[in-house]
Image 1 (cartoon, rainbow, N blue to C red):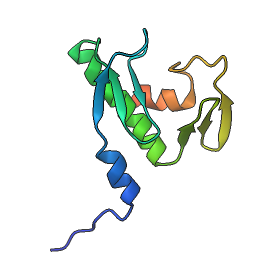
Image 2: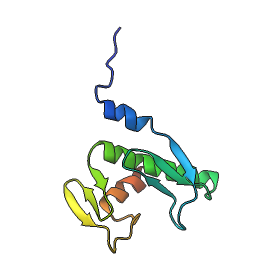
Image 3: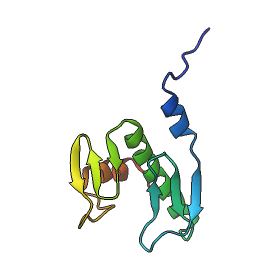
Image 4: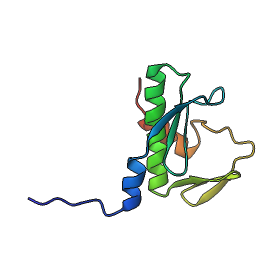
Length: 107
């Protein structure tokens, strides 16, 4: 019996990106870089790190689906441009965050 390989090389690259543990700014649990790398705050407890990683994996999937991208000044969500200046990043009511909070591991 045959199988179907993923034809999208970017999917394979994003899925195989490592998760790194680093010191992040106070209040920041994790970050997903635009290349798919996930960075988790190493000061968190192991349980908090697991929750943060599951949350960031949702963002990685959003980036892969091309629903989410960002630069220094804006976040782009499903074709809409949101200025980062004054944005409370990580706020659960932001659409991309709402999905991530809904789907993350619940400890």
